[in-house]
Each structure stands twice: as C-alpha cells, then as structure tokens.
Image (cartoon, rainbow, N blue to C red; front, side, top):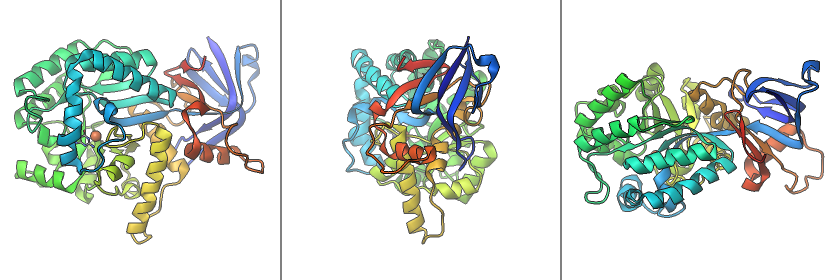
Length: 421
Ligand code: GUN
Ligand code: FE
C-alpha cells in the first residue's frame, strides 16, 4: 500500500552532509521508502497522506552498544573505574536477572523508553541468563525495537555464587538460547563479555559457533588502561588486545567492538583491515573515567564508527543525548590535542548516531529508496522563542541539543508506525 508522509525531511546520508527537504514528501510502499520529493509526483496524488505539519521528519537512532540488565543502576555508582565498577555494581545488578518476573518488568520499561526516545535499532548485551535474554528479545519485539541481542558469555573472573557459569554451561546455554530465538525483528549476536571474562576454551568454541552459524560478534576492546594491562597478563603471547579475539575467529567483518578508547594506530589498522566496527561510547568513557576517545582520528583513518549509550556506564539512554556527549568529547579531545584535531559538528555526530549504525543492518544512506522506514517525527513548537525565523537546519541542530521525549510525537521502525498512530 502506498502512503505519503509530509513534513520537513532531514537526513544525514554521509559524514558531514545533511539533506533537508523543506515541506517535503516521503513516499512509502508497504513501509519501504520509494523516494523523498520536494513536490509530490502526480502518480501519488490520490494516496493517503499523513501531514506532520511544521514538524521535522528525521532519521531515527541506532544504539550500537548497551547493557540491558544494567538499566536498574542507571545514574548510580559512577565513583569507581571500570574493573572495580564491574565487580561492585554491574555484576550484582546483572545477577538479579535470574528472576524472570523482575526481568520482564525491567525489560518492558527499557523497551518502551528506547522506542519513545526514537531508538529503533540496537545491538545489546543481555546478562548470562538464557530465559531473561529471551524475555528481553520479546519485549523489544513487542515495543517495535529491532536489532541484535546477545546472551553474555563469562566463564572466568565473574562473580562466584552470584553471576557465574562454567565453560560447559556457557556453551550449552548459548546453543539452547540460539535454538530458542524465534523473533522477527530481534536476532541473536554472540557476546563474549570481554577477554578477561572468557577462557581460551570458551573463546575458541564461540569462534566455532560464529563460523558454523554465520553469526556476528560483539564485545569490548581497549576501554581502559588497567583492563588492557590485565589482558596483557592473561595473554602474554598477544602483542595487542585485538589479537586475543583474532586468535579464536572472533575478529572478523562486522564484529562490533565497544569503546576502543586506547586502541593504538596498529590496533586501529587491524580494525579497518578486518571490517571491525567501532562503537564509541562518549558518556560512559567519561563517567567511569576510561579516557577521551580520539574519534576524529578514527574517522580520518577511515574506520567505521558508530555510537552507543553503553547503559549503565553511560547514564543517558536517549541517543540525542549521546550525540551531544559525542560532540563534547570531541571538543575535549581537541583541547587535550593542543587544538590540533577538529571537533565533530552536529551533522557529523548525527550521522554517526543514525546512518552509520543503520548501515550495520544493511540500510543505505539517509532515507534511501528500498529501505524500510526508520524515522522520528519531532515537534519543536514548545522550544523557547528564538526571536527570528529559523532555518530547518538551525531547528535540527537545536532539536539535537534540546529534545525531550515528549517532543518525539511519532516513531517509525522497520516500516511500521510504532509510536503516535
Ligand atoms: N567491559 C566488560 N564488561 C563491561 C560492561 O558491562 N560495561 C563496560 N563499560 N565495559 C565492560
Ligand atoms: Fe559496555
């Protein structure tokens, strides 16, 4: 069925480019984008039209790294660095997801908060619990959030008696979980927590499962200096952190690596060569004092960079907040780099939080014909009066900094209107 949406259409097809079609028309055929037009082609004149008036019709967001079972600790426990933070706060919080009723309540709320804030695609860590992971996938599916979820693997240096699994359990539960994943829009991704959490035997097994079943992999890389020193002690045979994944077939095209704050030039080159995707988590890296990621440098080198909220190291679930945190981080990087690196513009950071992430799922650039629609409709009419007429580009920039959830009046995910119809 043909359907037409009308509004000020804003998209970021390429890094630093913003496409603006004022009072434009977006034509859908069964949820698939036919095209974006400044004047409606005559052939669609009789099609049903949804007029979003003076609202902005923008690309929705992709959150490429977050920990669902850390949602209950959002905004708390930011006083420790990564490794102490994991043991003190994150692991005990995740342990509670053995309780499936609790998991249902938390994950229903998380799914609702994601979709109403305009995040329609995710790559997410669950906990090690199989049942709770299925519940998470089901709640995302019901809310209209699409993407990948991983049952976490962690068979060493975990929280004994609280959050632990043996190597055999980890493998058996992963296979049981994979066989029970039957969701249309939420798919499984293999998720070794990080090298310190996984024995060599488990890593090897996960590499084998990834190859046999054609599954993608997500994990953490070079997030903090003490973490990297620990990895070096665990794997003296590896010169760099990335090699500990490569050894077991987990370093491959479309492997997602969160953080990469301290990846050096050689590690970054290895990412580019393999097609590994970096997930930059600006808010988290400051909250738990990991470091200031050289994002501009990564982009200059041609790396594929996406953004993640990294809940609950990050304390901001809405991706428009993560985007502004990314811009601030790039400005801090510029300051510590003696003004030698450029900061990210709003348009660039928006691209990283939208198209760059959507591409991971096979989408094209911006609102590309042939893609299922992933979009938000943003009503900025309650923002403070500016005293002069604003261009759509100015309104877009202001919206990224000033949007609250109530300003997002409709959300389209995978071609379906899931909020506001
Ligand atoms: N490294 C291993 N596990 C985690 C986690 O839960 N959060 C963050 N930020 N880094 C990690
Ligand atoms: Fe993380």
